[in-house]
Image (cartoon, rainbow, N blue to C red):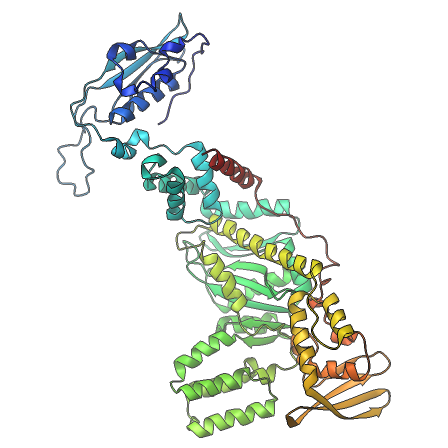
Amino acid sequence: MDHDTETEGKTDSIDVEKHWSTVLEKGIDQLTDAQITSLKFSSLDDGGEFYNTYAKSIGFSIRKDEIKRNKNNIVTSRRWVCAKEGFRKNEANLNCMRERPITRCGCKAAFRIRFERKSGEWVVGEFKREHNHDLVPQFETQFLRSHRTIKDSDKAQITALHNVGVKSNQIMDHMIQQAGGYENIGFTAKDLYNYLAKIRNNSTRDGDAECALAYLQAKADMDSSFFFQYTVDEESRLGNLFWTDSQSRLDYACFGDVVAFDTTYKTNVYKKPLVILVGVNHHRQTIVFGFGLLIDETVETYTWVLQNMLVAMNNKTPISVVTDGDKAMSKAIKTVFPKSRHRLCVWHLERNAFANLQDREVYESFITCMVRYVTPDEFEDMWKKMVDNRHLHNHEWLHEMYAKKMKWAEAYMRGHFFSGCRSTQCCEAMNAFLNRFLDRKTRLYELFQQVDRALSRIRHNETGADFSSNYTEPILITRLAEIEKHAATIFTREIFSMVQEELLNEQKFIVLYYIDKEGYRTYTLSQYASPDSRWEVVYCQDDQSMKCFCLLFESYGYPCGHLFAIMKVEHLKQISPSCIMNRWLKTAKSDLPCKLESQMSPDIIRMARFSALSTSCS
């Protein structure tokens, strides 16, 4: 219930015996008329609080009525009435199908207090007890208007939960459980929804787009390396938008060799596609390089996004790019990143194959051709066998996919670095995280806040992985103890587990012979139980550099079992520097400035602290 600000002075000499708070133990609903009219109040708000408390104990709702002021505009008298006082003016309008139910019936119950200048107190000037309607049972007073108030502590908690993406119905359930039931919470679900709508409207009162751009500008003021660009259409409306912060730009400097793109829908009230540009860090975790909010999905729009990404990243182009196969995106990549190796997402290809290949055996054969780590000649033999055996020479979809084999077949990806990223699954994981907090009603201003929350979560996970790699030791299990110990010392925990697996595979390989020529030794290896298999490893005696023609190191960035077999033959106690890729090391980011501190708003932090304190008090 709203109250006027008290404008008269207070007094410290109130008769305690007559103050209304002292009669609560006796039962406020048992007060006689004489007892009520003899009460005195310290302020106007105090009198209103008394009458509302009295009304709740009796079973009715109140509202403000007449107010009187003196010539100096100071309040001298206030009157409250039963919410059923008077009659509705348009009661005769019976043709309106959506007319609200009639709630007024001319009730005369009222309460007035006036300011007594001599004593400096507010005294009761009028009290009418009788009602001409049925009173509400106590368990239903929770629905009466004047008794539905969201307290400041509840507002703080609601706001804090809303800011971290908890849905409105979940917030209501939490508040009900905390209060001990619906009857104790003090407001309804509609009140909570109205309060959240008010917050949203206040946040975007100057226009959603203007407010969103102001939010980005505020971040740019706090972060000198924050980058954002946008376009405006012919009607002066926000068009395309791209943004990235300083931490994302630093991450790109380290791990921007592979970039994955994807779009997600239904993330905002305007149905704008949200493009997420992601990569993989030294823990093989998803990291975000930037975001694009687009007006459409044309080649021109995607080109604009990629060009702005290049500007933000000091014109560093990625070695490899992974997309979901969108044709417009593919053309934009070819224009902006002409030298980058483009790969189509394996997950999307599997779905398309399942939809276009009705025969289960053909589907499985296609997947084998796609993911098997073989040579191009072996791929061609596998493909020809699949097509000939099933008479698929005229299959339109297979013909189309064969023409794109350079973008999806693992055989043609050998030697091209993709950091183990064969799909846009890292994008999908980011989308799945955002979709928990975003829906079709999400406005731009809220979208940016939730995106910042997602970034904070991702970066926190990286910090945890850093801790695990730097302050814990893995268990060594191979016989090449010195090499394994070196790997455990330099590689992150996730990469070390892969290196350790290759160390175990080393036992399967047999050195058949080697050729020593001009300081280089070319070893030929075979595999136990597969005598026809052959691999070659070239070793330089001068700098201990080596290269295996299986190209696993060039493809994934860590040494293969063949290389470890030659390290054993050459009695090396550490991994050759030529077999170490800097991006997988614990020190991959050591040359960069310190990580940024949390960009969480101080207002949000204060609100969360107040909410936690309020919860503890409750």
